[in-house]
Image 1 (cartoon, rainbow, N blue to C red):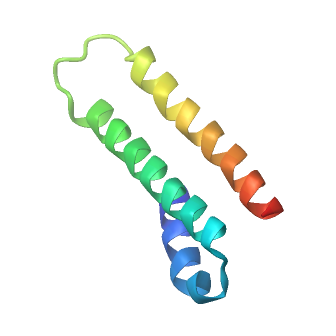
Image 2 (image 1 turned 135 degrees about the horizontal axis):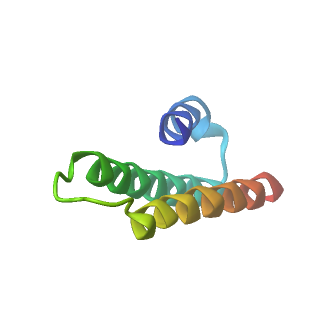
Image 3 (image 1 turned 60 degrees about the vertical axis):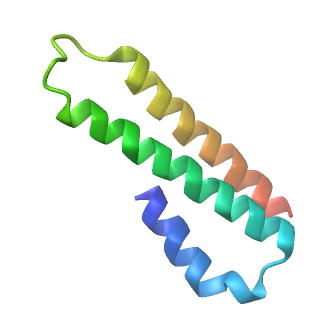
Length: 76
């Protein structure tokens, strides 16, 4: 969901944003794409026998970092 919101927001407001805001939006898109990739690797890896806490933690860190970057983007 955050990746979809980032993409739709970028499409809707790209021309109105300053260069720093555009750069932060691109960073958010890359970060949320990595989050989706790690989430898919958790779901499709058949070798996992126990919960993959490191991958789950990475997804959580990316989402929290994205929230922080979004907060900073609101200040720019």
